[in-house]
Length: 88
Image (tube, rainbow, N blue to C red):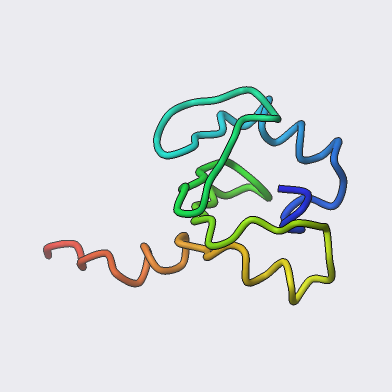
């Protein structure tokens, strides 16, 4: 989370994992050092909403924001758009 610039600090990233019921590919984890791979789907609470992210690449460093942005795809907004309308 810190490398991909989702969390501003490593401490905040650790807090998100330990306190927000982080799921990696649908399986709960509370380990900040839990391994992820390309294609992993991360689900967690952040900023008052549930975020769903897919890992597209593993960064080798914590670079600038544009470089980090290509490492994850936010599925939260896509799922809201792709969801069928509720029946009336």
